[in-house]
Length: 420
View 1 (cartoon, rainbow, N blue to C red):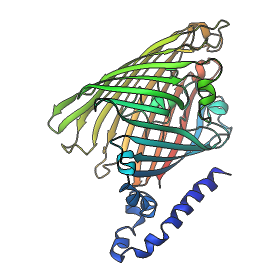
View 2 (view 1 turned 180 degrees about the horizontal axis):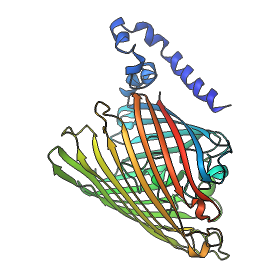
View 3 (view 1 turned 90 degrees about the vertical axis):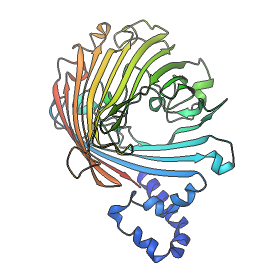
View 4 (view 1 turned 180 degrees about the vertical axis):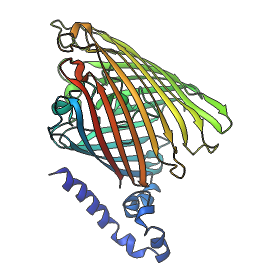
């Protein structure tokens, strides 16, 4: 069954469920939702179903992202068309167990994802980037359970447990301004730190303890061999098992300004991956890969004192280190800025610019004939309606794939992100 048919089937099912509700809706209520351009989502919360489910602690969200990219200069080829158009959809469901089942606290989260086409973007045929110029290009996946986990406090409110199938990139090394390929930067270097060997969506557990209101520590254990398309039980509990161990601590200070508090988050993390591995040129595998990372983001200026208004200038910085015997990229750093509401009257539009550099291992000099790859990206996310954002972007990739035989590339793209 194609992913288009799956999405259409979901929409039809939700429509049928709400036929009886629509018949009993008062005319004045219909008028409030008749303007499609003012709705928060295209279907107005699945035709009102979300409002009714919210009373029982259930929230549903469906987003579809379509991206067009073309390499217009340098790289491997400017003429190959494969992978120029990619798409993905995310169906998310969260359930408040207190409202739904009367539990004292806790919630369940389900994330289904799919994508198209078979080619994972233009990197392999047109650019040759080691980072990846389209972090949303996941290939041809039909509906796959990417996340299914429980989250809630244990032994008091300060200690929180997550357990199940988890996206660990959404828990560790996060960023307020460079973390989401559907709404922020497209280049993968600005989504996740490439020196951290995050597994695909994997079975695992995370504990987070709030030492104070602005200081936390988190520790996680993840199946290092996970395949995000599977349940995870085969790789977690059969044959030789390897687990990624990761620890992070961070502070979340707020600095006073004339327009209210400026929120920041400053993180430092350590990780250990016991799997045998080597860099691309290596003939000997080494176990117990160890590395560390830094991740900062800070609001620098706000346009007004409203704590719910995100207009203003923010900045981010990342650094990561990994062993040169076991990894192709040994040092990585990135930084950038985001400004929301830069243009008068366009309060929800976002402008972002970022620079990233990855240093390749000296031991992998045959595979990577140059020392580094750089990525520079500029994007502007225009909010056309509350449920539609259009984001043109331009990327400059220096030394794609660390190859002296490939010239610097310029990639143009546009992204359309819709919420249903």
